[in-house]
Length: 81
Image 1 (tube, rainbow, N blue to C red):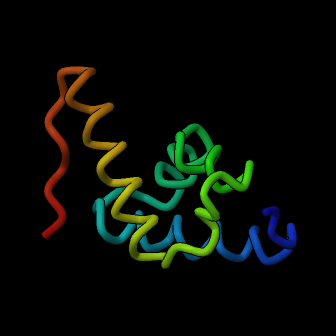
Image 2: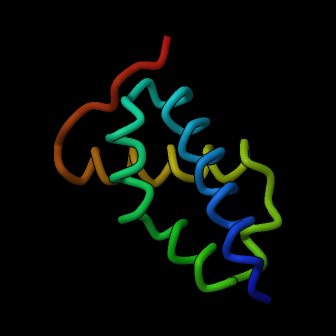
Image 3: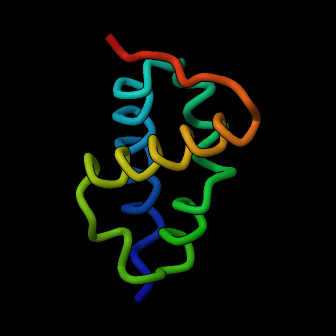
């Protein structure tokens, strides 16, 4: 199922903001990572109705993907204190 594009844009903004807060990274870095993430592709393509998941859930999924990419690159994730 595909969601309304305007509603998706608002969803993206909320998820990116929450991801930025939880991961302790700038909004610019969060936005850049989001648009390159698998999670974004899943939401955009309507996979498993990901757009219906809560903003916090999607932010947590982004953090997991972010930390995995950092591990693969050999960098330690930033702590979010």
